[in-house]
Length: 459
Image 1 (spheres, one colour):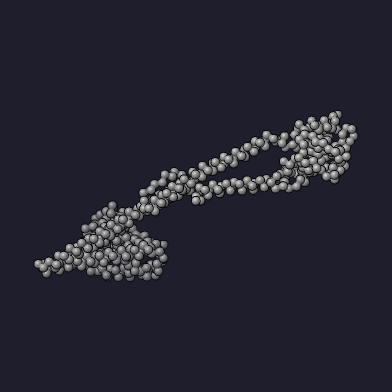
Image 2 (spheres, helix red, strand yellow):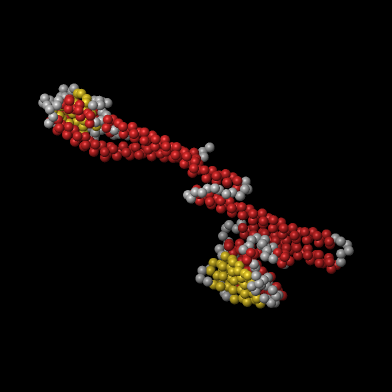
């Protein structure tokens, strides 16, 4: 199984090996084109100095060259007859063409280092051959002409350093591999914890807390994962509460319908009692119908992924239509409706926004005592418009105000049940407003009335 740990290690090793090969090739190219000509010129100057200093020496040429080998150089001396001898470390190869030897004996300079052939993986700096030398003419004190081939003895000059660098490179590679193994495990460990946590969430366990105290991307991922887990837990709790609320809301009218239906079967029941029981059954049936209709609406709104088909219409006409529909309710309570009628256009889905205004105004009428006032204002602003519905009703407490938009939440459960409320109207209104990219806010104080502010984008 190719885990992330395995992939990171293999990728790192491949990068290290590839980088080493590329670096070696580039370094070799740098040597071939830049360092090799400089090295050729340096050794050529040294060879000329050796010849110059010998002229003032009374030693034999062999003794002179033998002493210079202690300085870290190798020499090969060739006479005009083709015989040669080495001084210092012997050359690996001592084959030199007759043309080269004759050229040097005639007073020319042989630049073997500069013209040494290109080799991809072995730099000429370490090739200890006669071909990779500098050749200069030299005359012995006896008056004989020789061809002297010179090159640095890298094994002598850099022997300890070569071993040092070889050991250093090997240790760097070994320690790098070991550190990669341990550091990769440290990097991958939080991801493994995330994998385990993901499986727990998939199994339905949302009570997860990751102990990852890192501040890098993985740490932020773990933090976001914990936030997601908490959000899923809250969503699950809301779902269970929603199911419980639906079951309770359905069970209550069903129990009433069942009980009064059994009561209707009694033969000694009076006609007035029979009509009373039937009216209760009808009322509870209507409650069930309204509940199912609102649940269906919420389900459809929650599943709305595509953009709604908006049209432009006069919001004042829609509000006046709602006030006409609810006229018998607010007249029966002797309420005063003050409507700031302005001709303002709004862009949205008319049927959905109709539900918003119907819910807000119905609640204002329901919770405003007899003889109270309701104010409806449509305010056009720079970038949006606001519909404000305020009343002089009983108001809402601070604790209830924080949960007003929760589904099935009822500020006054006894009052709402008597009047047939389900606790879904405000939640539906909020969902519709959000689908229109707007906001809905409720401001209220107990005994001071309530103000509902709906803000929608301007046309």
